[in-house]
Length: 214
Image (cartoon, rainbow, N blue to C red; front, side, top):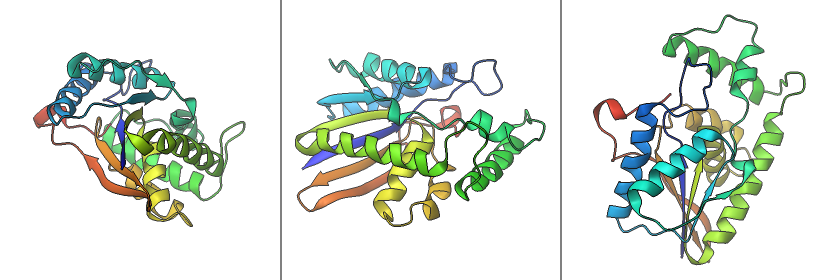
């Protein structure tokens, strides 16, 4: 039986000029997770990451603390959807308060899932299709070992929703996407009877100020 670990990146730089850079807390979350997984005896046969800077920096922090001698491979289909443009398309002033931004974010993604596509943007259906393709490739790699994927909340939510309800994942995606903790782990088992979601959003390595959602 194989094991696939889907890791959400560490905290990015909310409100900064470049959101895609990990905050100091984000780097620490990655180091804490790498040490935690190594302590549990996790030794991945492969590490895959999305193409974003926050994915790379999280993977680097994990490798630093875990001692895994694995070179991460890049799969851009694990990249997050363009939430900045999606939220901007709402035509509202972007709030600097995290709670107010989360409210705007949830309204924007609900409209997106319902079928709205901003000019030149990616549709929810296209996002779901590429995430499923990335999941299929990762599952194939994990059939005889352990694979760690470093990605974002959106793709992890889509993967989890697709495994729980493959006929209508949109029904669950928003609920999964909005509660994912930075550097959390979602476990997927790959066996002869199929691919199953084992756990969702694990984060026992985080306490106090290191536990963040955005």
